[in-house]
Length: 258
Image: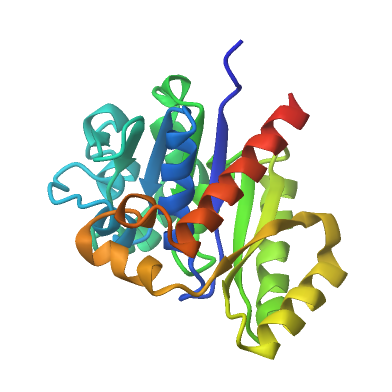
């Protein structure tokens, strides 16, 4: 029997925490494991699209949520087998304002992708680094939230605001929204602070935190400039191995939930 659809919003209002890197490489790893995956670039910076070498962005997530195109028009294949993408353009930043006056403004993304979701087993949404209308649309469309959390001093402080937003969306818009998990990113084995933050986060959030930790790795940083996920750029590097391990944990969650 086919696995049920899972729509995972990768969210954190802080920038520079590895959100897009996690979106691209988790999507790639899930596709490599045989899942049919759609990645939605919902960040106006469009870094997920760049990281997969997408040049043609005529049909995009901005036009999708402002009724300028259909999801089927916006979807395109990537260099990764079984991984499709809806790319983003900088115009998406205008949607924060434009969505405000629309009917069902919080549901524009959910409504827009509803006709194609049955074709996928995972939809990964790369959210913008904010808690505005785009992120609310992502959380309303999602079945779960995955939070990349950088191993830095203020990590838990920033997480509190995001958790409040998730609870508000669950209470008012999407009662079925679950916490997929928290993944610690940019872990530096040479830095004692990374270990302290990891222990602190696990102490506060326990089972919500994945066992897999994403290390700081130069190959992960290099890969987007070549328009490739790190899993294709250098499969054997520590960053690739970590994202493969994260995908394995996500698939284990899938089996346990079935």
